[in-house]
Amino acid sequence: MAEVVAENWNEMFLKMKKSLEGAIFISIDNEFSGLRDMNKEDISLFDNNEQRYSKIRNHINEYFIVQIGISVFSYNADSSGYTCEVFTVYLFPSTTGRKDTSLKFQASSIEFLCRYNFDFNKMMHHGVTYMSLAEMELLKRAMQNGKYSQQQKMSLSVDIADLYKSSCSEAMNWAVRAKIGDETTIKYPACLSSYLLHKDIRMSCPDICTFDVQDGGILIRKVCLEVRANYEMVREMQETEQAFEKLIGFSKFFSLLVQAKVPIIGHNVLLDLMLMYQQFIGPLPGSYNLFKKKLQKTFPTIYDTKYLSLEVKRKISINDGWDSDLQRLYNYLLTDRCNNYAPGAPNISTNSYAQEDLHLSADGDNNSKRAGLKAKFHDAGWDSYCAGYVFLRLAHINAVFDEAVKNEDKTSEFNLTWKNLLESVQPFQNRVHISMGKSKHIALEGKDQEAKWNQIVFLTAKGNKTFNMRDIEDNFVQYGSLDIKIISPKSALLATSTPECLKDILKVCKNHPLFRARRYSKLRHSAHGRYSMWAGIFAAFASGTFLVYSACH
Image: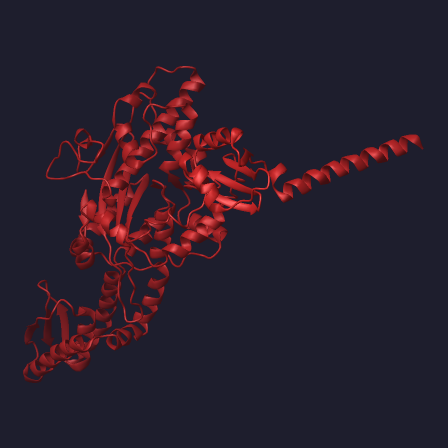
């Protein structure tokens, strides 16, 4: 697992780019600066997908990704095995004269990251820069027309501006005394932009050329005006391109990822997708349907392993410890238990870990390590690997089940290729899990399915009793997580989080002195449903009356 920071970014970018060339899919995971309170106040079991998107969009606009995990999976057809390269990238936003990003952290998120030993110094002092695709276009134009340099100089603090002036004065004083062919090196503090310093020094001295040196200085050479003119034409373009690539940082790889159009895998991935869109593409659209359309254009194929795990579990009826939480699901699939119903699991190796080194205890500590590497949950790189591993194992289980049903053979090992696995999970493509909402998933491709409210209680008050929120909470919150919507003084809807919670409320209300409860029916309990029902009855009655009248005459 490779750790990526600003100092090794150029080298690691080339490795990431090369690994992407042979990728069959990319799994991702992110650590955020905030969001850990989304389930406490903003989220409701009554939310439809459009409402949930709008709530999340409004909530995340100041939060950002502090660490992104990229796991690049490739397939070896000869061995039918899979290889993964894992990258953990610390991120910190670019600053330009035009843009100075505000960073918002949430105390609970900081506590969470600290609990798992997140290195904030590494993120802030050594994070790889990034900007959105929309900001990249603006920056490119500003650098081409010279406005970028002006904007940067205008935003300099007094002490930094003085350092620039001092470096330029040193170069000018040397150039006055130097002869053609003479050279000198100027050292400058790391806080200065070499791009601006090169331009300022050459602007001050029309008969010199400047070059970067490895130890962070600038080499100055005295030349004739003709050499300077020829040099300027080439060097200006090179410097602008180098400065641009340094400023956009990780976004350079993200652009390649968008172009690759390989499947993107994540676990409970909606927040990841929305923050990645906001951070690396542009502002989130105000329209939910427009967001789906633009996301589909960016990443045509997405798999959510939380949604996939729930669907596969329901399909093959497993109840022996299978959990949709990433850590527990990974540990479960790592054991031999699931081989009983899906033999012949694919071999998955990494560039850093041997498979036998990946057995983890339930709390996430690895029992064995190699080469000083430590596997840990809530590190974005490690979690991205786990999401990819889980995806392959779930796809294998699902494909084996389909083959066993088709061939009426539940004992054989099937020689399944990557193509077989991908075809097996195609029905789950572009379905993203939704937690605690009216619907269980978002359909990124096409229209969402109409939500089925099969865990809603229609509650009415007995006698002269009228409702207030406190009465309902005091009587029913003990049975599980629920949301309440009072629709009249004597009726309310209770959205329950689990089938067990629904059954308990219905059971206790059979003999409850204050409340009467029934399963919610849209036809019987909503105004629109009742209107439709009575309209149907009236239409049937009118039609019958007309037929009787016609028969009599």
